Amino acid sequence: MTVSIETPRAPRTVRRGGINWEKWGWIYMRVSGVALVVLIFGHLFVNLMIGDGVKALDFAFVGGKLSNPFWQWWDTLLLWLALIHGANGMRTITNDYARNNLVNLILKGAILAATIVLLILGTLVIFTFDPCPAGAAANLLPTFCSAG
Amino acid sequence: MASDVLEKGGPRAHDVVPTFTVTMIVRRFDPEVDNEPRWVDYDLQMHGTDRVLDALHKIKWEIDGSLAFRRSCAHGVCGSDAMRINGRNRLACKTLLKDLDISKPIYIEALKGLPLEKDLIVDMEPFFDSFREVQPFLMSSSKPKDGKERLQSSEERARFDDTTKCILCAACTSSCPVFWTDGQYFGPAAIVNAHRFIFDSRDEGSQVRMDILNDREGVWRCRTTFNCTDACPRGIQVTQAIAEVKQAIMRGKP
Ligand code: HEM
Ligand code: SF4
Ligand code: FES
Image (cartoon, rainbow over all chains, first blue to last red):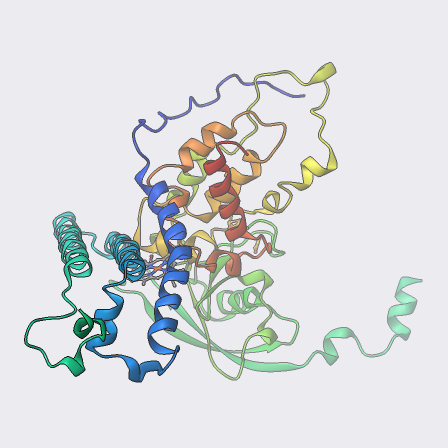
């Protein structure tokens, strides 16, 4: 014998519209994770493996990279994706361990504040960095400083 | 004839089964006496064919009748006797002593993450509450054709075969670190049982269950730790089932 029940135990009220932050947070972690694999390993490869390897790292090397729009945008993407990824991960861990509502709120507020400050500062540095500060010894600067 | 064979046959089976001594350290708790659970040692003479459940029986029947634990079928069917054995969630009736390292003591304790009631018994109500919440029954607005049965192809049946095997032992849910710290999370078992109906072609309530699990404390809480898959005594691919429900929710249909 089969019985057909129209609505057994009326379904509980379904999600109240709006953005489902948990779902989008979950998707963001995976999408940014995939992008980060390329960005982080690309960054490490270019900085540490190519050419003279780690010995090439000095002010001139970094200054040179930060004057190139390609690396400026690479680093900006890396900064924003990784920082928001890390902050969202820390939010998850805070929800795991900070059972006290007030402590939970304070910690997440601190994470949010630190993230915003670091995003603004980082982006500012990437785009306003001066690779040829006046008065510095020329042998410490990128070669294009003395060219002009 | 049968007795003939028995008498002529060689030594009886239990004569050749090797015996050994095991130390069981059981986390005991009597709410009327103890403030805190305490670990108690038992040295037992056991056979190579014995399971952890047999050892618990031996303690209860021969040493201390006050030891409390649940068991019913004793054959891995009812799901009553899930417990932490050497730190892993297992059914006592499906864990052979000889498969554990018997040169060391065997630690037995109640499932973690559910309220401890006595010795190895926990309160299963929070577990069953989240099971109930995903509405684990066939929902249909139509009568089956010819008033008989709801037909389904073998492919359609195979789609959710794995998750039909659940015996609601709670081994998975109580092995999940998210469940330990987040009192609200539905837990793997509820999602497994939602999966069993979400992917059932005869069911019409998939959307309702997917909406329930799209909640704050639903599938997005899962951190892919795989503890649940490791714990499941029925070999259900629990983490995969959860991932499939996530995918279905993102697609908006099973
Ligand atoms: C190689 C690139 C990376 C990949 C593929 C990646 C991937 C992921 C994924 C998929 C998760 C979610 C895990 C889950 O909830 O199931 C996650 C969590 C997390 N990620 Fe990343 N990630 C990468 C780099 C980073 C970096 C650079 C940071 C630090 C800024 C970071 C910090 C975190 C944190 C704090 C969590 C939360 C951990 C937790 O939920 O317990 N990740 N990562
Ligand atoms: S999925 Fe496996 S471990 Fe979880 S309750 Fe069902 S049978 Fe037990
Ligand atoms: S006693 Fe029934 S599953 Fe172990």
